Image (cartoon, rainbow, N blue to C red; front, side, top):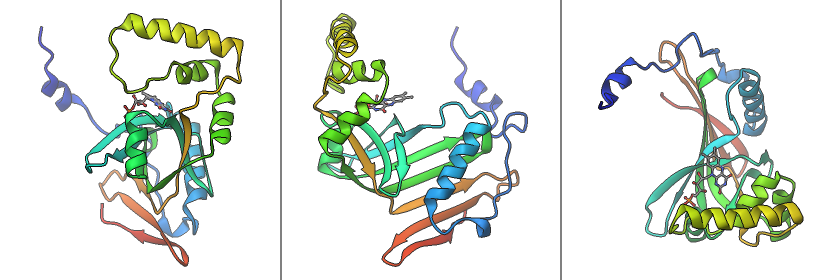
Length: 221
Ligand SMILES: Cc1cc2nc3c(=O)[nH]c(=O)nc-3n(C[C@H](O)[C@H](O)[C@H](O)COP(=O)(O)O)c2cc1C
């Protein structure tokens, strides 16, 4: 039986009041810089039961200017930027080497909130990248040691062999380096906070980094 994609689409709603808590957001009460507001919204998403609030879309462009986007984990957000980690040799790693600029999007549907962060990206020094990896789980290390991210895979059996060997190495030596694994920091130039509104008068507050500090601007939804 064929799946009726369009019938399913018609049956779906965004921000069903049974599951989504659309809270009023008064931009006049927003702090002068974006990081504290991000931390507050992140904590509120966690408290509201948002699954996996620490996953985000990472958009990059390759050297020909063609965009790509995928999900990665947030490793931190502090005055140095929003951080994530991946292989420098992956597709996104190569795109970032050619065009060190990216955009992140968080979507927290339980609160009808979206946060968008854009700016240049810098790589952390190798020691810091390795320390970040070694502070994570054995599985994260095994995945990093499996390597070859974004290369063509000949067969699932080939992955199984490489992954089993990587798990063994990760268990035997929790400090084993994964030389291409890199912690990246996106230094924000703009950070937009979007709060959904039941009457579609969504609030969009954009922080812009200027030579005098952060400015705040409202945007039409
Ligand atoms: C929930 C989730 C979290 C992920 N986290 C990461 C991550 O932190 N780092 C990473 O390299 N890939 C992560 N991935 C895999 C990426 O989405 C992507 O498949 C991979 O990095 C290869 O992307 P690329 O070919 O564009 O380089 C994650 C995927 C999902 C679904």
